[in-house]
Image 1 (spheres, protein in one colour):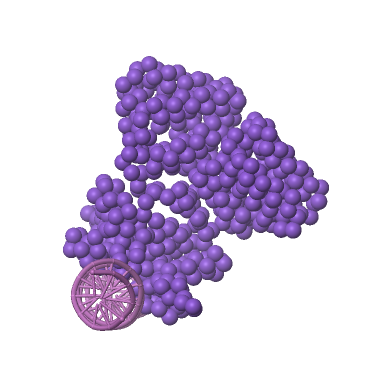
Image 2 (image 1 turned 45 degrees about the vertical axis):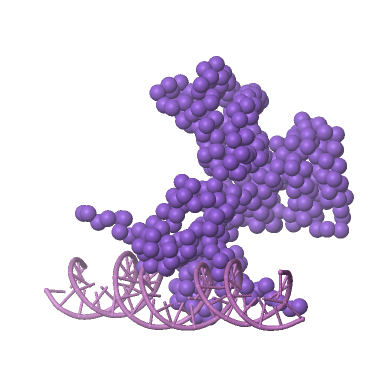
Length: 235
Length: 235
DNA sequence: ACCACAAACTTGTCTGATATGTGATGTCTG
DNA sequence: CAGACATCACATATCAGACAAGTTTGTGGT
């Protein structure tokens, strides 16, 4: 049969691809205005809806942004837009993989932090280590984020935030489990302090080692807490 | 003054946020069908265009997908959708930051690969080490990707591909520069072989060290090639 | 029981009308 | 002449109606 799949393709999709192609080819300059919707209609020979759909899709992808009453502009390269925030929960296997990535990345971050940290960076870390008023796992998150920030590498920071956000939704129960065991909380706090000390000393290798210890411990506890099992049951 | 910024907010954006909220709250099940556009119109009390715009935006973000004549479905968590492919070139500073991330990540990948590689994984690596027919930098890309694949961690693989894709567009000239210097090509090839040997031996520390050496060398050459300067001039 | 056709959904596209935000232009006033 | 202000042109945003096209479902005839 000569049933063409192409015929099922939406016009707006073709338009979106064509616009992407033109941007990639440099036909439209970065930060510059795209032709108006009606001009694009003539150019492609389609209705307004199709063009608007295409532009809306590109807007969702973060490739362009629309200013009402003004026009459509091409969004420039933006490190804060590198990662997709997915709404749904990752599976237990995904969490495991994600934690592997986190171990690799965050040990490296600790290393870099030990080299690049400023005194202000240390000050921020101290705030979240010794803070007892805030909820514990909020402090935990802020402490790890403070380390990432002292690398002064925006992409690393974004990536840490992304991983935290993705995991946070899934391992909320884990923190409750941990906080019922005061000895484990104490252990984590001491690990945090060791990491902090290594970064303060400016010793990359030790910072790496301490962070590795810490994350290994957390990983084991994470498994023990049966959180991952619960998630996979729900699926 | 009580001038409300909200008034400038687009209706379709509000609808999109509301749908996101409902998905996040679990009101709509993963993989299940959303109410039809006309139902959502009644539900939110807005026109079809607004709802359609909202759905199209969510489609662009990869949160839902639409089957014509059937309905709108919620896309499930997908590791291949974690990273945004941006069309525009990163700046010189972005490239530097990106390379830092790559060093952290890929040394960790080499470590993991040394632990988890199967014999098939080694076989694939060999193919791209000793392949002399293919274009050099294509082999280079495939070799590094093969290492990532032998971690058997899908997120790591996706991340490597993402970094490669983002950098490839910007450092195309770099490969031309390298290939005009046969001694440097030889050096890179020998570094590749050392990485391969370490992974074959199953020695994570040596794999880490060899990969680190390799990337340090590449980084220096990258700076020397003035590619980064050229990019920043263009901006 | 099975097959074919039709009906009843769905989304996709086009079109026209109206609302609203933005920028430029011209006009009026001090 | 300069600055405040009204106006106009043009952009997108939204709505509504009509029709096209795909999918599912049911129905009725064989």
